[in-house]
Image 1 (cartoon, rainbow, N blue to C red):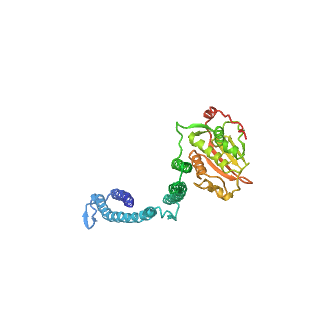
Image 2: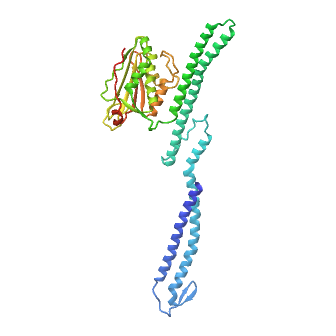
Image 3: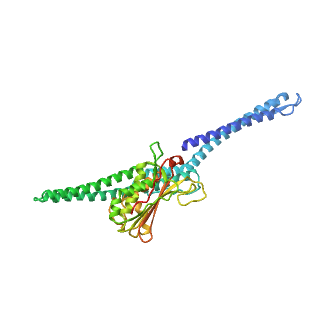
Length: 401
């Protein structure tokens, strides 16, 4: 690029200089031709040579043009050489930040992603390129760090069921008097451990697929009524709800059906994960509230404003439970983060999957602790178009407590 810029600038200067030299040569001839005419007998010397008076204009023109060509050629060569040198130096100075970007990129590896260009100077296009490169490195470093944590946590989580499997098998094989009852007990333990490992692997695959690509609307997308999805999720955990004597409030109060469009299986997984978390991390005799509504047409992700915005649907799942530190609530959305103060078992991927699916559908999710103990999770998703929303039946009803 430096050579091309130098040749381009030198070529432009040479072309302009040649035009100027030609114009000077033409003008000198025109000026000489406009000299006044002398009498034929008048002696005239041009460059020491006697010239007839009638030919004085032509002789002066030829002499002036020759002088212009001689001096102009030298000046032309000097100007072209100077232009080439200046263009080479200036282009090198302009392209130095680009070389810094290239050198930084060559030095980078997974272990040195903390290096940045931090280009100083005027905020021009090259500085914008360097800043964009630094921002890309920030995202890459965050992704690599998250990947390292994810792999380490996944290895730790998978090690537990595998250790249970091996221990049970070793203990049973070491017992020469193991009977059918002992073998059946071992089989039950192995089944539970493999089920946990299978659920963990499925969660990891789902999380990886969801985070790898952004969801794009397609013909396969379906309208999903979040009220109905919440009812189905509560039906799935009804036995656990009754066993822990939880009070459930899932009354539909929305005037319009809270319908969204997207991957139906993933969206129902979002509702199911939130309801399951609210039940499993609850306390005996606690409460659980699920509500879904269509926000006003001029709603943003935070609150209704006068700014134009697409219609949105809000899903809130709140429950009682142990008290949570507000500073640690955002960590619950990270993989394998259950929170030291939360009870219950699970893979620790529920809220991570919720966040990944919601973001891939263009929505947002946040959580906040409930005063007195518990957690409230709020999901906001783009609402379905009116023609699709009107075709979805909202049959929400109060779930029996």
